[in-house]
Amino acid sequence: MNDFFDKFPDSYAETSRRILHTPSTLARRTFFYVQEAGYLKLKKSHISQRKNLDSYLLVLVLSGSGSLTYKDTVYPLKKNTCFFINCMIPYHHQSSETDPWELIWVHFNGATSGEYHSYYSSVSPPAFTPRSFPLMQEKMEALLSVNSGADLTCEINSSRLIMDLLSLLLQDVTNLREEKHPSHMKMTEVRQYLDQHYTDKFSLEELSLRFYLSKYHLSREFKNHFGITPNHYVITKRITYAKKLLRFSEYSLEEIAGICGFYDASYMNRQFRKSEGICASQFRKKWRASQPPK
Image (cartoon, rainbow, N blue to C red):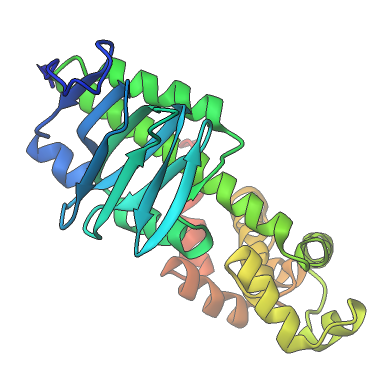
């Protein structure tokens, strides 16, 4: 990771720097890995344009302004905004002539980069203003710092920092989306109710009557917000409670099923197999701490 390219066009300030990296086989197979990372401060407008690049690009605007063109749409950019794009899709970004920008960026790939971007693009435009911008900037600067080395430790730390950046990014866009959605508070109330009553008899019809919503609307909106249907949410809560009792109590399977809201061991076992790939008794056997010999 010690390939430094200090020669930039005349439009770049002398403090600008870029790091290129060729990842190890292990990193390609296992980690998020850096392809290129850098910092630039412009003295005048500059355009960067690419397509068909097997890379994901995350850029933070530290100062100045400009624009991103992506999928035939122009997104204005200014201080404390960022963008996250798939570079296989044609794009270009350009600094303002009158207010040249200062950027920090990383091109990366590997691990579940595509899945992270797919989720991001499903809930947010490519450019937005993250609340966690200062922390993201801190992570980016740390990423540049650790990439002055070229060993496995450096690649592990780089992967961790990229994951931190993506987690901050997705948390921000998810929170913003939920806050803007008119049914956010109502769905939060539904989830809080289920958290308190998941061991009770569950009926989507009764739940919809309680919250004055049609069961189809309730189920759709709950899944839109939390990525899971109310029924599946309840089952997951029951399974988690059952796991605790299977490991740390002497209750029978029938008793645990009743306590958790499954009402019979057969149904609990079917749900366990769907979730864990094993039945409840097998889970208990695998996870119970071995007793010392007498």
